[in-house]
Length: 133
Image (tube, one colour):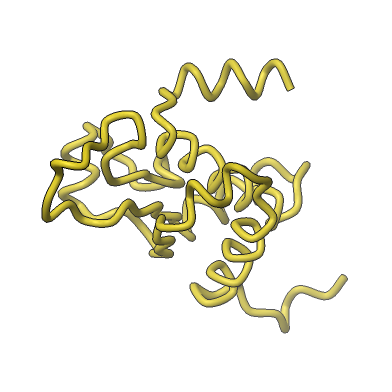
């Protein structure tokens, strides 16, 4: 395949792939995640990386920001909507390095991982589920 004439997938291309992965979520996960906003950015903001203690911006492919379902209360007011951030450049870098998955599979994987945090799962919980699948 000739790649010299093809541009890298844009932020909009990533958004379309993420929306397709989001629409493919099975119930009840889809319904319980309906209010999660998906944001696509090239990299995490410097303050986010600093808060997480990450020096290399290529190390963070996605991030969940919000109050997970297990911690929500009817008494919460003024709570920002839950958001999943997908970071295009680190995902592209991982996709190129791996070479064993399609880009849409990797975007779906990162999205589902971050939505797992929406359900209150830790990284260890999510990795355990992935290993058992």
